[in-house]
Image (cartoon, rainbow over the protein chains, first blue to last red):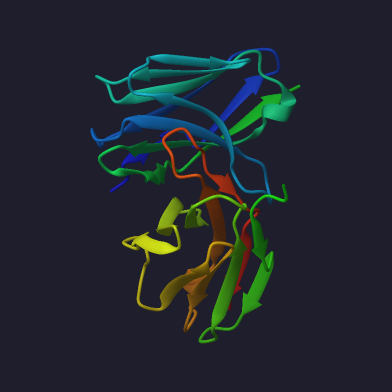
Amino acid sequence: DQQVKQNSPSLSVQEGRISILNCDYTNSMFDYFLWYKKYPAEGPTFLISISSIKDKNEDGRFTVFLNKSAKHLSLHIVPSQPGDSAVYFCAASGRRTSYDKVIFGPGTSLSVIP
Amino acid sequence: DAGVIQSPRHEVTEMGQEVTLRCKPISGHNSLFWYRQTMMRGLELLIYFNNNVPIDDSGMPEDRFSAKMPNASFSTLKIQPSEPRDSAVYFCASSLGAINSPLHFGNGTRLTVT
């Protein structure tokens, strides 16, 4: 049973528009959330994170929103650029599950169309 | 910093053969993780070590899989005997192990078992 879900396997967005990637989780013990980006033939790289004590974290064009009551988070990319085309993984960990044990979702493949 | 180094990048072997995947974590990182990526299951955590000690191996699929970390700079994941369903990309990652320290992934080993 997947504890971290990304229900959209793929997403296409025009360059310059907003990309919104969604993630849901089921384990209420998760309290730290991360997004990773992966290009083909490379390992995932860390993008942005958020602690459960916050509901928003912003880093340049990337913003992560957390809705704890809904067990939902989203990653917004504004404006989207062709170089953002990659697979995006949502991940979660928690103090009570051990911050070391990071559980990943299945990923969403983002295509930004020039 | 060379990052996490995995070898080999590609491995093709026949069913029944032993396969050994290797990983060198980033110097100074005290947590090491082995993940497996498949189309069906996404990124699965197989096992992780903290200070060279296996902490959680509940993700290891079967007794055919084993992992070791004899020192802080080297880890192996062994499959014996290998089966076609083991075909996947295997990633090694390391981290400082603290709440705000993300995982740093290697570029993976693509394993094909025929």
